[in-house]
View (tube, rainbow, N blue to C red):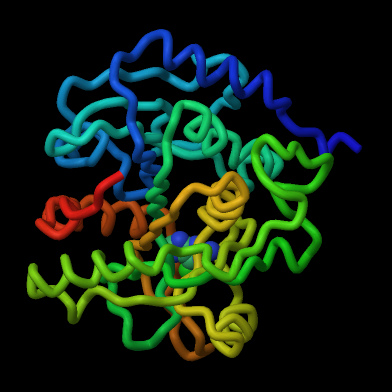
Length: 294
Ligand code: 6GU
């Protein structure tokens, strides 16, 4: 059962200890920078780059980390201060379509937990399925549909280690209500509530974008945005009791009719990510975030 292999608690402790031995700060907030939030070339405003007193650890230097393979995705863990708050942040994540099993994709979340993180902020680029969403909008994730879980694939499969969490973790409060409220307050305060939504996200394995029929089905079951990440990270985070906030940058509108001859593509996804840096930068600097005390 190779696919249900998993990292031992001890192996992940080694990953965490490697980082703890090399950084002085003790972050409580872990951030996963998705496409559009992560680039650094041409993109000086990206979150990881704007950290102060940065310390970077390429994934290949951290014990037990898988290697990131996809073009346009960085691969390092970055520690630093964001407006004086210590954070650790993944610049580049592991995607299922790269060939990693879900438990490998999500392993850095457990490493964050063992470093001492209590709050996870996961970001991604996603296709907008809700017809009211426009390219460049932000969708705070209020819930998800675990499509890969429906198909019998889950990062928690295999033996459960109770030191992380229970065998059968609940998932009905996956996205913290208080943080969603703060996110809304920041949007209001910035007068961008017309482009900030709360919606349901789903992750498909990729790497292909969806067919029209697939998107119609997802819309029917209540999905607002579709991407290729985050859900398995959030499940792993909730399993070990991290508080979660997630949001998507809508990088394209999902095409749900046969008359529309546009096609989704990766370049468009990355370009929208870049062009929305100033907005995302402003959003994360919202005053209300400062009321989060961790
Ligand atoms: Cl349309 N689908 C998926 N699965 N991921 C995306 C996307 C669409 N647009 C950006 N990321």
